[in-house]
Every structure is written in structure tokens, then in C-alpha cells.
Image (tube, rainbow over all chains, first blue to last red; front, side, top):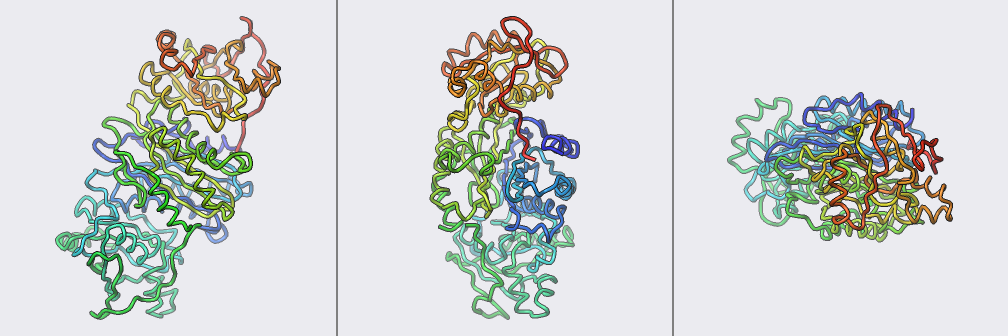
Length: 310
Length: 310
């Protein structure tokens, strides 16, 4: 199957929603954006043997993950995903059969989240890569940045953290509904999705906001997989929850008043995505202080440090 | 210089325009789109040794071209470019010095066209690639697709064609002003930018519109570079003008009434980008008939056939 037949194959597979004015097959796609809404844009590229291993993951899972990580970014802005485009580098050793399975996984999530693919580009390459750019929309006053955390705010996280390597890193459901609910009902002062690990992503918020934080280690929600990977060693499991990465949970800050509102309504609205208040914002120095059993303790060991692509 | 220092370096280099609500450094960027306007989106990826050769082109030129080809797509929709995001695959052998020069070329065009970079992503890779997604806006009734050509329409092309390999392929100025002017003043029935060569891109219009065309070979505007590359052989030069590719000129169709309007105003408005009427749309069979000295002739030889990335 050559490039043009494959694009034709995709064109038939891909349904276009009502707001797509021009879909696949022109110089560009065209999209209606809601009146008074702002466009939210995020881009993420995954490269073979850097971000995933073709031997360890099925093409369906890789395709799904390529889109899911982008949806998670849109969720972290409190926005509604609208559509996406995808550019693919295809080495000769990648068959169109493999590529069809990649798209199968990706398009299944497309349907689930009602986010159409509206365009893309193919190129030959030495290794497989997929670069997705996703668009969302939000009311201007409901876009949640990393930079709005204030001393006195509480810090919350959705779900459980750590050990995502056992499966969660590719089968997670992006927290779109939760992010949107938060933006519309309490407008968190800052929000981010946890991709680099709780500590590193919290530090992103602290630096962008020019504030510090105190975290209660007793409160950090450790996942079953983090415990499993630590064979029952609680310290190691906690360390994983703090720094493993690819949890794709939401980490946000909110005033005490907004915390109260959420405590009343969250559990009923999202029974499967528990919300945990793990600490507070304090001071103007972007560092984290740690508490355990009500006492200040030294910084816990982390399972890993950040990853640089350079 | 590591990844985060480089992003910081870029952040300082990149000015953000008034409509950019959230720029580089968050989960996503946010952008205001004009009231009642539609979002136009295009994506293009360039890969080392497939789309360009690092030994033949300076990093500045490669960076400029990566953005210019995307701007050309927006121009072909009759839209105004608004902003773009870029994902880069960086092999270890690409130094940050080289990358700075790549961005220098890209950002110079950014300023020239007033299109800010609002985000991006880096990944390690085996070969250098750059995937750009560009956004534009247009009034819903001024988006020019490939599919609206009608029998009786005239076919026009901007500039001169062929021989782009001598330099035009990377130093061309995207026809943004011309595309926008056409969309707003005469609304062509169909439009495309010539990237695959006149014949192939005209065929894209014919297939999308379900029409045929007759082209007058005497009218095709052959570039000086096409003549130069053909050492004075007129037949070879014409063949290059018909199929060389990467001209990034606009090819469009318009009714006889609109042709008259353009004949009156075009030269004054765009003295440096001549408009040439090379033929007409006829019938419903998506093939091209050829004329020379007022007589039907057989299809001319082409310099090359299309390129498949699969």
C-alpha cells in the first residue's frame, strides 16, 4: 500500500465532527471555535526507543498513548479538546499493517473522547516517530496556568501515583472530564498534569508561581503498582509515588474556600478518581518542605531524576 | 547547554504577540481567535536526508524553510497565519550551536510574517527532524478549498515555475499577502500551493473538484532557473516548469468575471508577483488536455513523477 492509498484508507476510517469545516485532504484543515472561546494548543512528539519500545508495546497501545499524552495536557489547562493533527516518520521496516494497528489504537481513543483527527503528514525516516498537535478551547477566564499558586492554597492530586511502568503509562484515561470540571467549578489557581513525577511537576508550579510548598508524606496516594514494584517496601513505594513519572494525574492548587467546595462534591461526581489533599503552598522560595507524622523531615529519596532530551 | 537551558534561551528570543494568552512554558499555549473566524490548521514535517541535506543547506535556511512551507499552505487556503508550534527530533550529533542557527533562520521569518512560535517539544532521535503545526484564521466564506473548480473557470498561477533547486525552494517568500488578497477580493473557486509541481498539483484540484482542464503550453511561465538548468533547451525548461516542484506559487481557478477584476487590479497591487492565465477548466473528467500554438498536442514530457514517502 503506498502513501496515497494509505491516506485514502485513513480518510474513510476517520469521521469528522460537525465543527470540522475542512477535513483531511486539502492544504489545511478548518475548524470552528466556540464564540468567545480561546484556542488552547499543545504538541508532543514520541520517538521509537526514546519514548517507547516497539518490542514491549503493541502498535495499538503506542498509538493510543501518542494521543492520550496530548489529551492530558489539554486536561491540565482546564480546556475541552477539539481536534488534532499528526505527523509520522515512517521507516521502511514499519509495515502498513503495523501502522494500521497504530491508528486503530489511536482512533479508538479519538472516538471515546470525541476528538477528530483533522490532518497530518508522512515522511520517510530512520526510526518511527509520531508528532501530535492538539487543539482545545476554553473560556478566557477558565484557562488554568502553572503560575497562579498563592501562599495559603491547598495542593491536591487526583488518583494514585507511582509504578505506572506496570501498565498505567499507556492505558491511563486522560483526566479531561476532571480538568474541565475543576476549571468550570472552582478554577484552580494553578494546574499541571504529572508526567515527570509529582516532585518535578510540583516544582514546575512552584517556579512558575514563585512560591514554596509543604508536603505531608503521610498523605501522598501511593498506587498499588508502586507497592507491587517495591515488593512491600513502603519507603521505596513512596519514593516511586513521588518521582516515577507518567502518572498523567492532575496536580493543582486551590484556596481553602474552594477546597471546601470540592470536598462536598468531588466524590459524588468522580467516585473512581479520588482527590487527595497532600499539602499547602507557603512562602516565596520555590522549594518543598516535607512533613511526616506532623513533624518536619528531610527530603525523601527519589526513584529517579528528570530526563533531558539533549 | 541542556534541554531546559535551551528552552529558556528560546523563551527569551521569542516575542509573543498580543493575541497569545499563554506562551511557551505551560502544558499548552492559548490563543485568541478573531470573532466569527474559523481556525485553519496545517502540519508539515521535514526529515534530514529525505527533505533536506545538512551538507547542502545552512541551518538558517533549513529553519526558514521548515516554517515557510507551512506558511505556504496557509496562504493557499486564503487564511491569515496566526501562530505555530514546533516539535524537534535532536540527534546527539546536532549541536546546540547548529540548533541556534536553525532557530535564527526560522525566527527571522517569524518576525517578517508576524507569526509567533507558541510552543514545542524536543525529543532525542537518530536523525534531525522538525514537525511544524501552523494555525491561521479566516472568515468561514473565505476559506479556499481544492474542490470548488467549475467548468468555464480560468486557471491562474503566480510567479514563475521550475528550477527551484537552484535556490528558490528555500528562499521563496510564502504567498500570504497574495492568497489573502485573492480570498478577500475574488474568492477563487479552488486554490492550492505548488509543492509537487504544476501538473501534479493541478491534478489535485481536478480530482477534488471532479473536473478536467485544458492548459496552453505557450502560457506556462517558465522561470529563469528552469532555463538555466536546461542550458537553453526550451523543451526541457518547459518540462521543469510543469513538474519540478517546490515552487510554492499559488495555483487557482476563477470565473471569467473574476478574471476581469484581477486583470484590472493585480499588477498594481503585486508588481513583483505576475499572474499568468494558463488555461481553463472544462468537462468532468479529471484529466489535462494540452494546447500549443492554438492546437491540441499530446502530453508533454515531465522532468519527474511524484514522490511517495512509503
